Image (cartoon, rainbow, N blue to C red; front, top):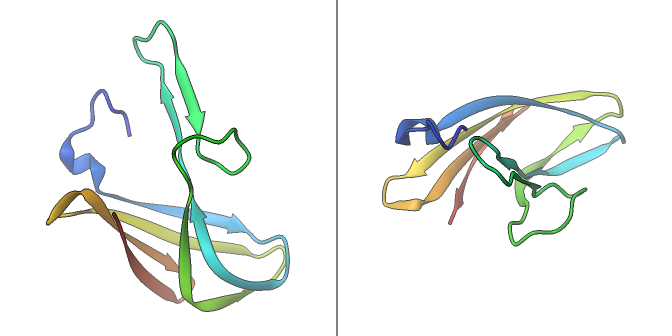
Length: 110
């Protein structure tokens, strides 16, 4: 999302994603994180990630626990879709819907 041009409706979106499975197991959760870049018209660019491989920040990752584990095989590509919607009753919280394989769950982030 481009913060210089985004409008309120842009804050609600859906995006497809893929995860390549490295170990045959059961998937019990999906973790989410973000990268952010403040660089347009900035003399001092600010870039950081909340990803697990990066330096810690005050922002954290989010873990979306699955109600039912999904069996997965090494090398399999797990396809899904994330949908982000604002909570109309609380503008600072979100509803996140994850669809993975044959399951769909909605989470409330506050």
